[in-house]
Length: 141
Image (cartoon, rainbow, N blue to C red; front, side, top):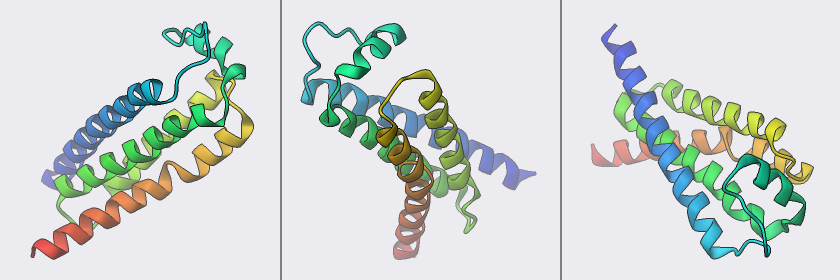
């Protein structure tokens, strides 16, 4: 039971950290890559209306946010769990993947971005977060 609770805490903390990293990069992206004139992305409807005006550069930060948010969440979940199992990192990857798939249905993003995002941003970066945390843990020993 204690192992389960520790794993649950690891997933919750990983999800919080990953979500914060994700949101931070999304906010940063709006400052680095300027939006087209007259675009309002403060609402879902405004974002949907603006999507056809976005070029490939506008999708760099969303991809980075999804990938690095998942990486950070999986890394923290693995450190908190403190065991060899990759389950907490995999759960983080699955949670963020579910959000990415839901986003594909809610926002009319280009198909190339949706495929790239779903295939490369979530589970591969969750695995990488797990590997980096395990490597960090092994170096400290």
